[in-house]
Amino acid sequence: MTDPILACRNVSKLFGADAGRAVRDGRVTAGAAELAAVGLIPAVLDVELSIGRGETFVIMGLSGSGKSTLVRCLAGLAQPTAGEILFEGRDLFAMSEAELIRIRRHKMGMVFQNFALLPHLTVLGNVAFPLDVQGRPRAAREARAREMISLVGLTGREDHFPRELSGGQQQRVGIARSLAVGPDLWFLDEPFSALDPLIRREMQDEVLRLQALLKKTIVFITHDFDEAVRVADRIAIMKDGRIAQIGTAEELVLNPATDYVRAFTRDAPRAKILTARSVMAPVGETTDFAGEVAAGARIAAFAHDVEQSDKPFAVVKDGRVIGIVDRLAMIDVLVGRERKTAA
Image 1 (cartoon, rainbow, N blue to C red):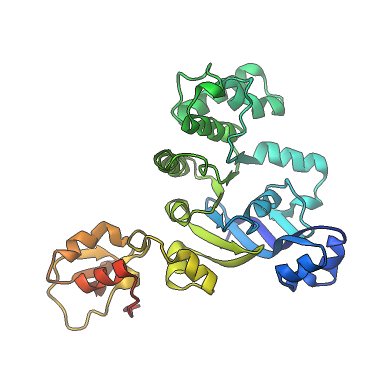
Image 2: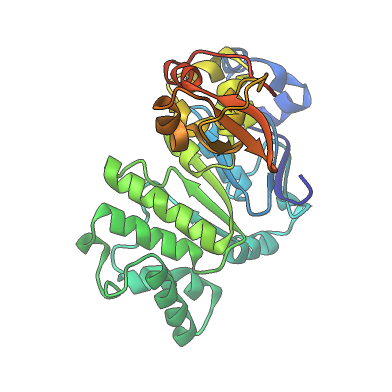
């Protein structure tokens, strides 16, 4: 990674008396149970990661895994007990309070699970609120707010109050508000978990649309692996405050580093995750192909055609045949059976 915008260096966050001393004594290497036995609650333990500029980086885990505490550290809202949070190469918590506030106001945006809209303000007022905090003139902040409201598809709702909106519309207001300042970093802390499944998928599509348009660096928190697969470039899975593994969805499914990661990804929609490259077989002497598929194509995009053919399909990269996929490969994917690849 050539240009990380955000990084953790051995970050730990412990709650309890003498938390700092526990870190100095090197006790962060102990397990959660051992730390709890001495009165410490380990929320985040020795986390190391880097997030590239323009990347959508998903942090996920079950309740209590430490993911939300970690994102609060990353956003400068909670100071780690130990370690560094580097934003554009500078330690957030080595900055003055005034500089940290300036960065949070101008460089970061955040969307919350419970929307966190101000009930006494209209849609326009809510979206313009962070610009008001910055001290921008009313005309400028309202013009920017209207631009963001249009971006999320709520034109015509400017004068509505939160109570007059559906859950999905309220979260769109939250998204518009978080983007109003033009942040470099966009934090989404389980933003759609309170929504119905159909609305949740619609909002995931909205994030994908906005990311394609705006190219922000996104840190997205979720406990839903299917959601992570849809939005992520890379995924970090947390357990007991630690990072169990970081990788693409395909890497996590094919090469789980621990039994926990294997269990976490067991029911993942493999056809939507795995690519032709990951399931292809050697070409051998085969020259009679039913067609071609790109090496990076998701299996779901071509599985039906392959299943309907008696002949294999050529897997192509840079105009060269590098392997084949056939009906048996599709069955293996659907039943979760591993097979040797040509790679």
